[in-house]
Amino acid sequence: MRVTKGAQIVAGTALLALAVAACGGGGGTSTGTSGSGGDTPVRMELGEPQNLLVPSNTTESEGAEALAAVFEPLVNYDENKQVVMGAADSIETKDNKVWTIKLKPGYTWHNGEPVIAQNYVDAWNYAANQENAQGAGYFFGRVEGYADLNPGEGKPVSTKEMKGLKAVDDTTLEVTLSAPFSQFKTMLGYTAFYPLPKAAFGSDGKVTSEYGEKPIGQGLFKLDKPYKKGTDQTIDLTVYDKYPGKKPTGWTKLQFKLYNSSETAYNDLQADNVDIHDSLPASAIASAKTALGDRYQDQPDAGIGYIGFPLQYNDEYKDVKVREAISMAIDRKTIAETVFSGTRAPADDFINPAIDGYRQGACTACAYDPGKAKEQYAAAKGPAKLELGYNADGGHKEWIEAVANNLRANLGVEVTVKPFEKFANILDDLDAKKYKGMFRMGWAIDYPSAEDYLTPIFSTGAIKTGSNYAGYSNKEFDETVAKGDQAATPEEGLKQYQAADDILIKEMPYIPVYFYRNNSGYSTKVKNVKINLLNQVEWADVEKA
Image (cartoon, rainbow, N blue to C red; front, top):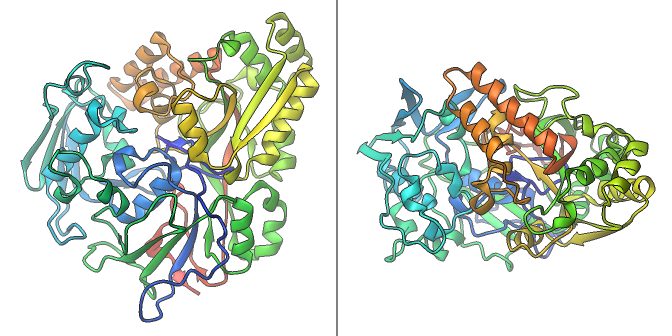
């Protein structure tokens, strides 16, 4: 569940996407050389992660990007959105309920210890335990015994383990779900399912803050030093020499440079002071192809950009007729063509066209109809004043201002636009139920399934430990998604997911505004830059120019 920061995207996100924010400082004008022996790092623009770098508490794109460099997931995805094995050697099931995961030999932690099945058991039990308040905890909700670790607020947890998790031996993990779920193997590429070494846990059984600052992974890169959130302007890494997979050639150092301005990062990209910018601001897209030439990339993306409503704690948006009217007042086509120079597509479904399950024109309230919007808004007695919040670090100002102008002109209301310096800030305020205005949100897929546009963002269970920032809760929606999860075939499951999508279209807890494309660029110092389905860089393929 990867919420995404950028106007480009998400993972991410994560997540959400929503993705995470661009970070503190934001100068980003130094060359950023680190390491010894004159090994100049490959440098990538990144926003400040919302939290410390703990996989199960990372549900946004910036933290996920950093962790993807440090960990190897059980599965990856090819260009056809099909699962390929990563750290897993095989994943098998006979009934979609009991899953046997065999680990690939050769993986070791960055401290030299071997990776074993128990590392996954420990990490997943920690993530699922309500006492640990992990943002991605809900992703383990299908594992048998999850309810034992989540008895409810104010109730004590009587066990530390889910009975559905078992390390059969050092290389075999058995997972029993509470009900069949055909998408389980597909979802195992998500950040929350990374393992944790013994060194992650303190004497109290909690993941330590020291580990969150310098996570020990089993992936391509290891951290050179602890990352001090809010202070450090970079996250510095080095290729782990015992990593058994493909390594980059010609370079060993990676540096994430943290920015709180996408525009500043783009200026640094043009000056060769940063090498990769995967979220070009809207203000740069029109000129980027000319400025960067072959170093500009425009490719399909599975993310969605939304306007959200804090339904759980602001009754001004309670009437779906109000939400529909706001949606119909937004001129998506003009925003996509003008603000984004044609690099977005008007959204007309809650499922992105890149994923099976999308239906063109499914969302009738997504069609631009200013006359009907004004009439319906007045009849529903919509609020005379609206506020629209967004993260200023993600290049969103132009399109959010365009939406605000649409609402002013077409609904006859006063609209205040509220920028938040960092994406992390608006996420924190939404988590705390402090921000009561409409809000910009984005979603980058965690794994290639229609279900990933539903459960993590809109299910009741995702209100507390997921990315359901609206606080939307609908029993029929939850039950329909569950039918899709338990369907005997992918085709039957997809029909149920589309039925759940229809419920979202009817109720509009979010407003889908546009489908992303990934607009990125790189400097003259690197080449062969590839960004995958999760909007993360394929580091082993990157070369020095």
